[in-house]
Image (cartoon, rainbow, N blue to C red):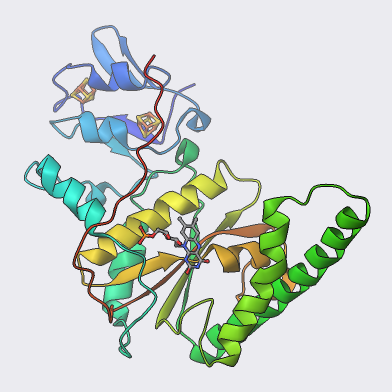
Length: 288
Ligand SMILES: Cc1cc2nc3c(=O)[nH]c(=O)nc-3n(C[C@H](O)[C@H](O)[C@H](O)COP(=O)(O)O)c2cc1C
Ligand code: SF4
Ligand code: SF4
């Protein structure tokens, strides 16, 4: 099938065939000429053909041809410096009473689009939550739900004990978690979002390709990028747990009900300064 969504300027094409090697479903050599021919369904909009084509011979009608700036080789880290950047990161839960400027948040949001997604599905969406009252309400709701989880765990533990069955450790933890969160809340703390100036909620349609991975990769990208701006963050799995399948929470955030929240970050300007990198267990590795 002839494609009308991709074209090759034969004047510019030097015949290097990188496009053919990278994407043989679309590009081929026909009568000494490189052509791009395929049903659009063969294309996942990865942009690799354009990125590989040094003389800029390829035009893709569904991609913004103005948004292919040259690769910048100087934008690289020395290995040890990059390891230090990773090791310098800490989860921050104490923030200055200072808003993150809209322009800074926009830089972070925009960078998400360049994080990889399964099959290049690009289905990660974001809620940037700065409304203090809504943050407080959602925090309180999360604590209430954890209290309910605790009561249910308590009930289950009693049943297991009556039947002289062993109690899984996770169940024992769940029993006390709600209580601990409530105690912190009663003490005037926000045990969920830690009174952060911004909460970033990453969501995707449940039926998209690898939605959890995509959201976590996007949030990790944002979290690391934010560090270059003096902004620190923490993943908030507690909220993710209670938001899962919770229509009331999704609706409060204007998130479509066929979506799921897959990653959550609190962020702000840190109040604490960590002076030392921390120890972690070596990764169990099987070299085969
Ligand atoms: C998937 C995930 C979920 C997390 N959820 C929470 C959370 O709900 N609340 C919180 O205070 N910290 C949360 N954290 C932060 C971890 O506790 C923290 O990353 C860990 O203790 C290691 O500390 P570090 O990030 O400073 O290395 C979460 C981290 C990850 C990776
Ligand atoms: S990558 Fe560009 S220059 Fe190379 S063969 Fe394909 S269209 Fe021609
Ligand atoms: S954008 Fe990706 S999938 Fe589409 S034609 Fe180019 S290389 Fe192939």
